[in-house]
Image 1: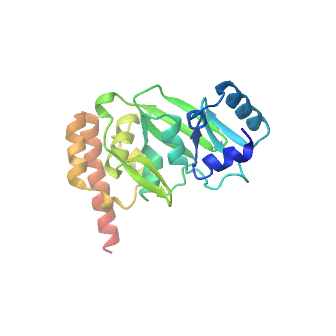
Image 2: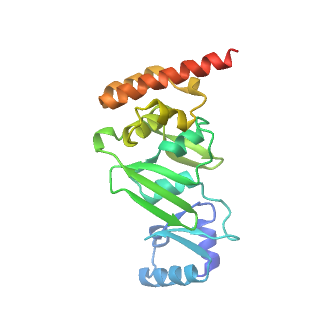
Image 3: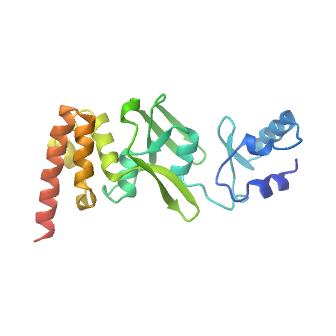
Length: 212
């Protein structure tokens, strides 16, 4: 396979897997050798075994970090600080894409960014949806309520008002309080009940400030 053929096949794909190139009558060993050469030449990026992206200037679609995170660990969704920043609920830029998985936690550095995967038990793996993150890209992202609840669950001391103030949460009126209360009850942890009550306090303070 020539590199021009690869570009034609994957031009509109933000990332691609080796399997996409093994359709039809091809030599798998030869395809893998060529991928290795193109990687060494800087024409493609390897994100993990079997997952690649075209490198500039060949890429036509810049891969969104949320989509890359989903593809790095298929059984995962973007949550925590990354999702909260995406929804405009924390003011800070989040340079590391944070995700939830039922698999092993891990920290991955790639040519397309840095990704942090946090483990959660399978019984809490819900509350995410497919979201358009770019004009032609979608990714699984936690709802605002679940992103906040995941953070409260995983962060030690999250039921402290001092910690919650340090987060500098904003736009809390975007929360669906019925959904938030449902998650609090479903996860059924005293820590989360305490933290949820404090979130209500912060939301009241924000509302009072905005009414001045």
